[in-house]
Image 1: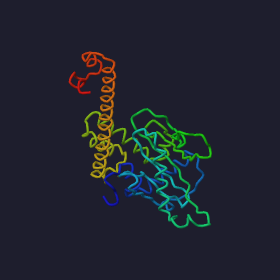
Image 2: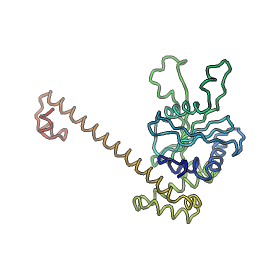
Image 3: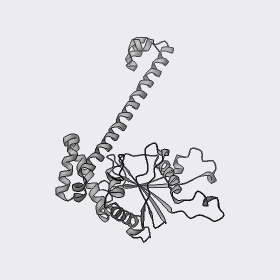
Amino acid sequence: MGNRAYKDSIFVDLFLHCENASKNFYSLFLALARFFKIDFQFSIDDLSPVELDSSLYSGGRTDVLYCIGGKLLPFIEHQSTINPNMTVRLLEYFVESLKTFGYEKSKYGSVPIEIPSPIFIVLYNGEKEFPDVESSKLSELVKWKGWEGANIELKVTTININYGHNMELLDDCPILKEYSLFIAEVRKQIALHGTAGFEIAIDICIKQGVLAEYLKKNRRLVMSLFMGEYDQEMALQVAREESYEKGVERGCRNIAKNLLNMKFPIESISKATGLSAEEIEML
């Protein structure tokens, strides 16, 4: 797998690690620059991949990050779930990225250092409904806003890349469009055939010319990356369900305690909370 990591996603492999990653990212950011009307000229030779690996993230790290001509630092995150805390995560990534530019000594000097301009973009392709484009700010998470001068700001723009959304952007970046079509086909086949549908989706996409060369060359890798993503998503889903169930159970126990204190009959409390008489007597 070369410099690929087990925690990579197919998206990360396409735009950071695969044979044509630099070419793919060049196409992606060129399309994003036109989408956002960023007036910035660059060539594929201006791209330098930046990979962060820090214990700060407890096993996680930014998805796709390149420095462009030493001037731009676009953080591209790929999300299949809606995360309201992306501004905090991206702030952490940005701070960590500064350490890769050798500012440790010069930041104490009398000459102002020059840092690349960061751009924070999330590409969303989850199954929940989401607007075409939505912006979020770090200041929205700040609880106390009694002094404007204390604010620190970071803006993240989330773009819906599900097929049928932002088609101008997808048409402008063929590799992103094919990725969107691939994910749509994967979801369709998994709904019909379970996890076996992933391999069926690969065959269909190869026949239809969707990421065909990439899927032919990297079939085994794509399968392993998908299973890693799938297992991670299943683990998160189980954790969410367990958390919800524990929360409900705690809530029922608290209600039962209150009803006991109010001298309600145990039989009535059992009917109201679903707890057994034995569980209620032990509270």
